[in-house]
Image (cartoon, one colour):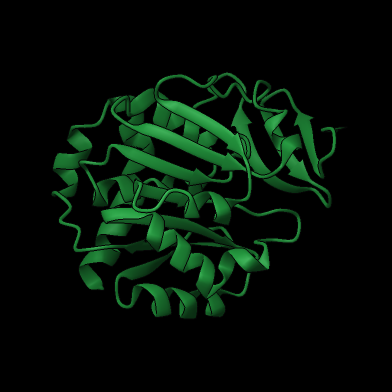
Length: 240
């Protein structure tokens, strides 16, 4: 393992995977070395089921870069999207090239900063917001608060959708805060075979298309990765 400068993050190289780990051997990102834009970790695929809830999305915000799995996937398969990312850890940003995250261009911009402050600077900006920010201790307390979720809601455009990875945290508190901020406009999806839940919340009333139609319109290289998560979300959506 090679620690990145000024960070608790480590880069671990294996013959099959490149991993971003925190102290205590907590794996934040696992990248398949010969297919760097494959979403290897299940919850990342589930989070991107949010795209089904907002098929006309044009701008996506991401809090937490990590190894950039979702950034790489979106940059490759969804050319219509503008992608804005904030990451607070300079050490993680220093590993951007190692994880083969594309450089900034007309569609992608990555900045260093505090996620909550960054969201406050982008009111009503995002059609989709992905929140995946945690460290060796789990999700920082302030990023699960009612105030933080209110900031997230404020950063959503009308009809916008948020997906948040809930890992190693007090799930009951997150559920309560989501309800206080979004009311009934949220649902929670347990991640199979993982200790994660993915929280979805939205402004307005999404009208997603039939799952089969939406998947059929995706390139085959993206479709197989999104299929299971979208079907699980669609089932929870119908039962809400």
